[in-house]
Length: 194
Image 1 (cartoon, rainbow, N blue to C red):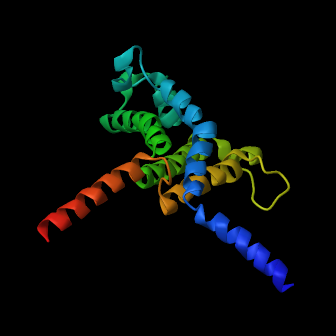
Image 2 (tube, one colour; image 1 turned 45 degrees about the vertical axis):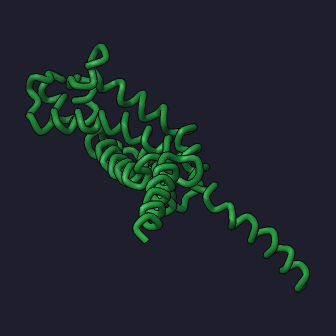
């Protein structure tokens, strides 16, 4: 039995040394499954042309403030300044935060931002779009069906993002490259001053 435990420990001690791969794999899974989801969603909120990211559209109004948009027949001229700022910020977040995660730059902050985004998105889906009234949309934990859009799927999204908040970007990231450059620069300064 001691021999089996020693083999087990030897194998898994080596695997534990590859800890930097976990966040790299988390970023890869994010890119493979969620990057295009968020980008396509953001595009539906933008206006025409390259400067469309600076204009508020009926699509963005209706997605983020569904009840208010419906009350004014999706007329964006009826939006408050606050609503316009929220729609623009949400749209920009859907473009910028996923890219930061994929390239591994400011990964912890970008992941925290995405967690906040997913929470707001989920609450909007539940209360703004009426998903709370549909058990299949809300889902349930500890049941036999793992496909509820909010409690099931988005729990996995948030867990994936929490891995990045806790572990950072991992190997092959801008965070790693920049931290090595800053650390190397600081070490060189220290030896020059000594």
